[in-house]
Length: 380
Image (tube, rainbow, N blue to C red; front, side, top):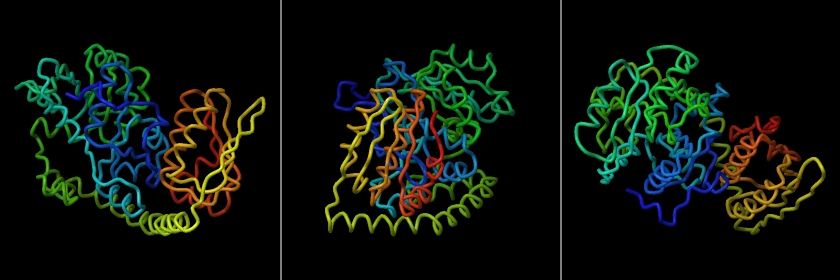
């Protein structure tokens, strides 16, 4: 079991090491810290919404704003899909490998505190699968025990959000709610019921139930390492080929229209920073209604800690924040990740953030990163 007295800290959203990859917030974490944060949330009984983004998440968020919001309101987003890892590498983000939801589940299961296993509730899946998975988990001692399961049938998110369903889940007193409703429906269900759930850790881990129930075999390690788990999944579940084909076509379009331009921009930013050593100057202007944070220079990873300190300072005022980019000449994926975390924090506090003074070049980079909506949104 992870030692809760280690140097790890769950911290707040601004503390997260988040990179924005085509609009997706991706936490740069290793498995050890992910398990620690789960255990910490359980110990504190604190809501902890985990999303494990993959290519299908990237595709869905292009057309579904509420699905996109489910990623932005998550408390941890370790990357699952290898295509996202490959894109991150092209964009020079330090995301080297995936941490799949199934790997997180297996790592928790392998923890050896059998005297106090993590209590799991399984919600969703095909009829009978959650029950089979629950029986399999309890068949032998491990770091997990299943305290209940529920098959809600087929229906809308609203159909599956009745008081009786939520009450049964909450009454289990579980530590970790594992949902399997299909990525789109599952994420929306978790987002809409976030404040009603009493189980601290919750995540949509669709394939986990099938793997635990042995109704589907997981790909061998060699397939996973080569990024070919999708090929194995098609062998096991042939109907998935349509989804992978559709997602692959969207990926090709995004690669040509957004990834390649961003890769060129990223390399230009890195070269300019090395040649000219661009700094970042931060100024605050306060009035009765809001606080303006003016940035001048390079809004990049090397200056994030300084900006975090400024954001923490202005957040104490509980006033709306305006970030002025008039004199910003460069911005990168790490800085965009910080802006998403600022937005999440302010949205939780029922306050707002807006962005002004963007040059045409910086505005284009916002849009290429999938964050064009931030330019017109007031996070109230």
